[in-house]
Image (tube, rainbow, N blue to C red; front, side, top):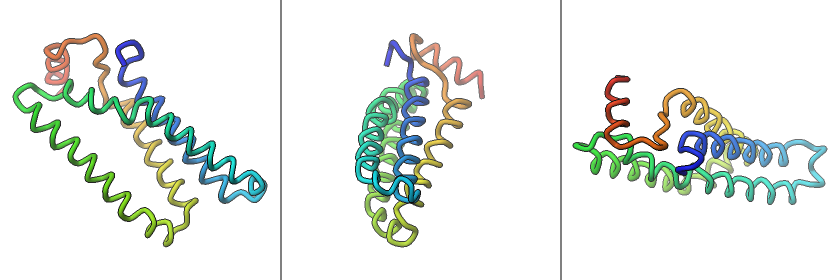
Length: 145
């Protein structure tokens, strides 16, 4: 993370997750891909796990403590990561219901859309913290507001 930078890892990660979700969605809808839907589904799943492990999984746990001011850091990180786990729980809880209602391809396309939106958000709003002290980051973020 210190060599590549947090922002570039997040962009690569969410871009890869979007591509893998799109691959999964297309493998279930395009008739020309029907004979290959099994291997494509495995490939899409493996690519998703690799992409997630590259950035979206570990980077927020490192980035969040760096971007919050020291006076609120503990509470803000606890709230942020708590919301992350609550979101994971809700997605896991309702995933099968949503798939039953809308179809697996639509759900994966929705996930791909969320990942593309994340790329757009990260590219314009997340600051790079690589090689900067907590004080430098706090000064840069407070002057940006």
